Length: 579
Ligand SMILES: [Cu+2]
Image (cartoon, rainbow, N blue to C red; front, side, top):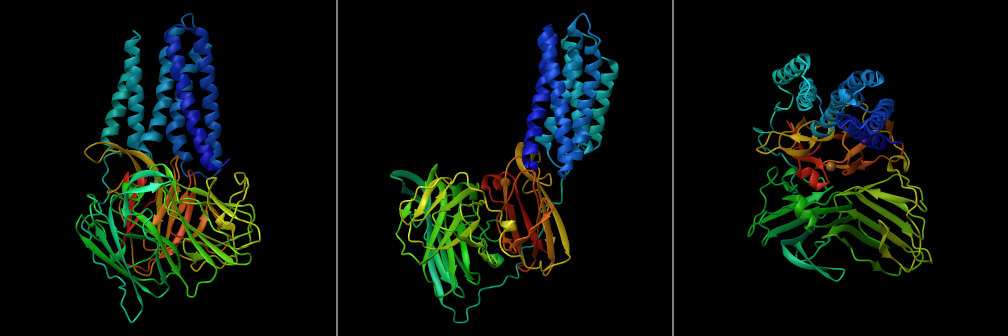
């Protein structure tokens, strides 16, 4: 079992245990003895099972197993200790165990609420708050059921509540704000020294586009979704004029995976102001990285990208031979893009498929009918990639894979999540059961260029209630805080920086640092053994721990966020800052 599935199992069992105790309490209050006994037996079993999942999580190296033991376990144990003996004494009136059973239920629910609502980091204040809540609920129950509340319990509830308030509850801690930082970008400008300049104009506006025969209201560059494919030859200067016709929330261009100078990065409020209707902005940078990339708006990025403000950016080495096809995958108004494309290719011709995932969730790609190699990931070539047969690849949100093969005499077909998007002829292949490539073990290793790190940061990805704004929100958090309250990570030019990224939540977080490519060191404690993997987008699945490193060689203030853009919008955005 993976840590992620253990976490999911632990959550389900915790819910069942809480439901069992609460149900048992309610049944005994209603004097329904057999039902009460059955539910209590069920709750006991679930509580025992929970002990097993927590031990398994600890053995799997899960960082937060201790916290489950510190908060959830004492409450569960207290519940069992209070309710168990009373039940075994087999009292005449089963109603007399209702309060202890309900206490057990409140305790189990309290532990669950701390995990789900508060998230990381659990503090003494939060623990005390949970205990106070459980004791208060128990006191109220006592009164409702007509018994006299125990003065001990009432006093304990009061004491826990006061202690929680005194410790500041950990809920009201305000981390250092990002404010007061001068945006002084000593960026690498694209100085022209006679390089050819590739000029494009992208005009953002609302548009009605045709997707599989249906009219869809979209936001589009130059009236099309995806926007025009921007291509260059390495060494060219790219000059892209962005105009906004009528997107009221503003637009920008972010060059996803392209390590441009900070001033060209297109993050509104960080590197530039959003381009409002009637305005324009000219981006200019040298195309000095070959490979497959994409561009998208970073203003209101969740809705903007989803509605269609994106396109491919491909920088090729000269000259290009063979067939070179870009496949940007997107979901527009629930409809999949691109439309299937069938083009015969002569046997023996080299084919490169540039797969781009422009959605906010992972896609599964399968190439049937030929052995192929993954030549590059996120624009970086892999070292000695071996041929793959009947193997699927998973591309994270924002990620790119270049698949290469020599066209066989028979047709080949590429499918995304089982839907064919590109083929050289009719192919019938069941690809759903194919194993998935692990890029961390693919290709031939080279030595990691760094042995020590100048700075190390840990990012714990989680969910939790964010109470700092006007209205509470259930945010996606990093280290217990949500944007704009997550302190920036400050580095100096030339530092070798290590990030440890831990996913404590129940959902995948595709991580994306702007302006830099990170080298994958380990995943779940196991070193990457394949070709050096330089990524700009990687899925950190529930329960996973990734260690990645990069050289701080591109000064400025850079967004560092989840590329599930709804998550980024709901708090999961922070910044990397050069001091
Ligand atoms: Cu996320």
